[in-house]
Length: 82
Image (cartoon, one colour):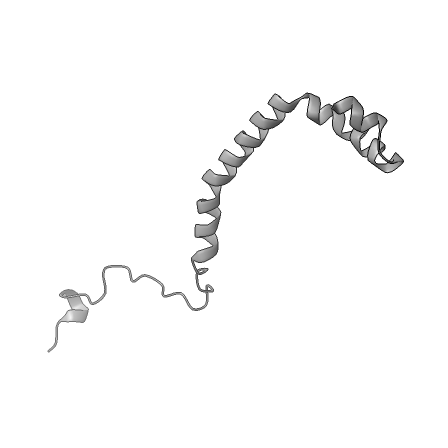
């Protein structure tokens, strides 16, 4: 069948068949490569989709800075009233 496609058909079909012959002859390698690439794509797709679905962090000017010491300080000179 391969030789039939190359020897028959229009000139454009013959050229296309000649270009595809190396791919067709290495069918097993092509199948294995496609399966590996498909597996990698299926495993990494959720990672990228998760990054796209989460909102970006707010700009630095709007972030609340953490308070050192846990907020209000009790005791010491500032906590005592006269």
